[in-house]
Structures are given as C-alpha cells and as structure tokens.
Amino acid sequence: MTIIDTSMASRYTHICASSDCGCGLTRRDMLRLGALATAAVAAPLLSAGDARAQAFKGDDQPVKIGYLPITDAAPLLVAHGRKMYEAEGLRAEAPRLFRSWAQIVEAFVSGQVNVIHLLTPAALWVRYGSKFPAKIVAWNHVNGSALTVAPSINSVAELGGRTVAIPFWYSIHNVLLQQILRASNLVAVTRPRDAKTAPNEVNLIVMPPAEMVSALAAGSIAGFIVADPFNAAAEIAGVGKVLRFSGDVWKNHACCVTFLAERDLVERPEWAQRVTTSIVKAQLWTRDNQTDAARLLSTSGEGRYTPHPLRTMTKVLAATDYASYEASGVVRHKGWAQRRIDFQPYPFASYTEELVRAIRQTKVEGDTRFLESLDPKFVAGDLVDDRFVRKSLTAVGGPQVFGLPTDLLRKEMVQV
Image 1 (cartoon, rainbow, N blue to C red):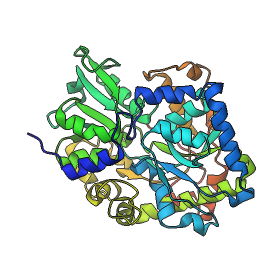
Image 2: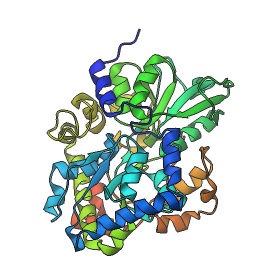
Image 3: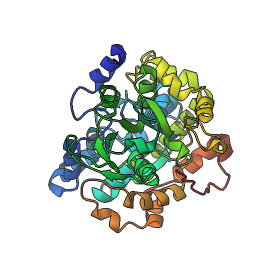
C-alpha cells in the first residue's frame, strides 16, 4: 500500500477543496469561461473593470496580482516578496490566490486584479475566443512541467488503454502530451472515466493539479502532465515518477505568461513598463538565487505564497538531480543543457507561431472555431506586445544576461 504524506495532502486540500478548484479547469469552469464570450455576461465585467481602472489617475494604479499556487507564478510573487514593484515606484497590494483559471480570468476581466499569469494557449482563447482585449507582455518562465506516471509504467506505450490527466484543454501540457502519444502510435480520446478505452487509445481528462497526486496514488489515473511542483510532489511521496520533461520535448518552451489588459498598455504605458521591469528583475534574481526563491515561495516563507513545503519547492527551483534524469534516459536531449525550470522573459515570435499551428492539431473540447481563422504570424504580432520587455532587458544588461541571442530570434526545437 502506498502512503502519502498527509501533511502535504492537507495543504493541497486547504487551498483546493472542491471539484472546480486547484490549477485546472473543470467542465463548470469551461462553462463560466465560455459565458465570457457572450455580451450579456462580459459587458458588466468589462464595465466594472473600466470603472476600477478609471478610479486611479495616470500611473497611480496599484499592482493587483492574481495567481494560482504553482511555480509558474514565481516571478510575480518574487517581485512582490522582494519589494521589486516598490523599487520601480509602484504600489503593490497583497497577491490574491485563486482556486481556478476561471476565477482568475473573471477577476482579471472585471479589474479585481490587473497582473496575472496565464497559460499561453489560454491567452489565445481569452483574446480571440472570448474577445477580451489583453496581451502577453512577457514570459513568466520556460519548461517547468513533466509527464508523471505510476511507478509501474516504464514507457509511453504502456499508457495505452489508460487515463491521463491534464490541467486544461488550452495548455501546453495538452499540446505536448498529444504529440508524445502520437509518436507512440497512441490516439487521444475524451470519454467518461468508466468508458472502455481501446489498447491504442489514451483517455484524457481535465483534473485540478492539486488532485493529481492523490489520484495517481489511488490508481484512478495512470499519469498526469502538469506544471511543477506537483510532479516533484509525486516523486517525493513515492507515488509517481517522471517519464518525460516537457522541456525535453519542446526546448525552452513557455508555459505561463504575464498577461495585462490592453487598456493599461494604452492608457498607462509607464505603469506597464514598471510592472514588466519588476518581473524581469524578479526572474533574474530567481535564476541566481534558486534556494532562496524556493524558501520565499514555500510554506516556510514569510508570505506563504503557496501551500508547498520547502523540500518540494527546492526540488523544482534548485534542482541538483537533473543529471540523474539524463543518466537514466528520462532526459533524451542532453545537448539542450536545460534546467528543470528556468526563467527568461522574452516572448519569442517563433514560439507563438508554432503554438498556433500546434494547437490546431490538438484535440480539445469546446468551441474551437475561432482557431480556424488565426494566422500564426498575425497572432505573434497581435497577441504579444514586446515593447516593454525589450526596454526591461536593456535595463538589466541586455538579453545576454539571460543567455538569450542579442537579435532576440530563435528557431523552435520540438523533438519527441
């Protein structure tokens, strides 16, 4: 019998106590988000957001962070914990922790929060599916996710006929998982958990990450693909093992991004610049102070930003065991020289273009008609506003301080 650390499980339950909590989206969440595409629902929220924004003159608007308790939110939280917003002349309120993507998007649209991290594919949905005017101003991090499976599973092929959990249909996790499955001649399907699945099929279900570790331990799923620290939590608890790291499939891919309302970019460009610079500086500090960052974000930190213990956060942010994954064959592309999670803020256009192409080849639930008319090059220029991050990079010493090319161009490497 597998025993899970109940103190760890209780922390997750405290934050995510219902079926539509955690960091994933349930069917209820999808309905709530889908409703934002209707004028009757969106108009009052937009009006409330405009009213809140107009309550402040110029750049006096406070920084109001909305986040979910995952490492993807690290730059926003480190900037708060290290008082980097204040150093840029901003006033920052205490970050607000949300239980679901639906809640965070609703709060963002209505102006309750004005700086959020969001899954990159979900940003596509918000701007083009629900038609809310917001843009990506920077990446929050690169890599930081993994496909974790039951200890008895040793290959992707062994997932045939079983169920794997994802955090959201519009996520890089879903995109990469389906690429991994196709490479092993497996077909992704979406059926009720008790439905029969053929040996060459893998049933995908959306599940809050906070429930994934216990579901894996109970045997109700064969694996999950999600952001850390839930993969690390499963490893430490002895109920799962990493089969592939997401960054070992798509080199230095983005997962979550910093998302700002377009009204703030237009009406408060200096405010947007200061916010972006704070986040860029937080990323640089996190890269150089991994153990301190883990402590700051853990339950041991003064801010208690997440419900995760220091050991779990350290395994992700200050990883010293990546070489062991290379030696065991979990990491296949040793020449890519990556970290389990890393931080760099520049939103490469090549990535956005490739993501648009990839999501079209990915099975998702819901109305996907808006994807049909999206041109990858147009989206790269319309969804992303890189004016602010370019200035922020210059302020900290240039792209090279993050190991980025000076021309800020790259070729996407996706190799399953």
